[in-house]
Length: 237
Image (spheres, helix red, strand yellow):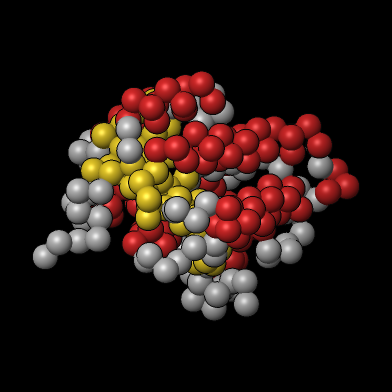
């Protein structure tokens, strides 16, 4: 039976690990032609081991992005899973330079990728962003992350009204067990996950494959556009 993504050309920006890689593998399993991009060649080597096409692209480099999309040609779906962790901390002591760095690390590269991809997305195709629950969770110590991810999420419905030849959505994950948390020592990370699990109705933190499922839903459902879908185990309730 033909899948919704069979022979579709799909680019996963930031697909060398975590949620992006999980989505890339799921698209590949549905017979899509998948290319993952990232700025870390070593991580991309790991992605290549799963039989995915890869390209070393720094999404903060607009010229490199434009060149890549021009050489790649028409594409059906683009997933942008570029991560960033700068901007954590209570606002009174938060370095605004670090917060600016956080925007440089995630916000501007995502906007670069959206603009660069637009001329090459086939009619009826889609863009799916990966944001974060910090945009709406109102948790102390996350105002910087809220500003960054909230700025992205607030643009999604506006883009959907402007770009009517394609669809654009976002998935907003909750706490997910990925390398994003590797800034914590292993024991501290495990304790943090246990603590979060007591606050999440699902009783645990999420898995990359579960967020990837939501990404594939948004890419494959032709009646979904302009939406930010929370996939957080009920954490935002």
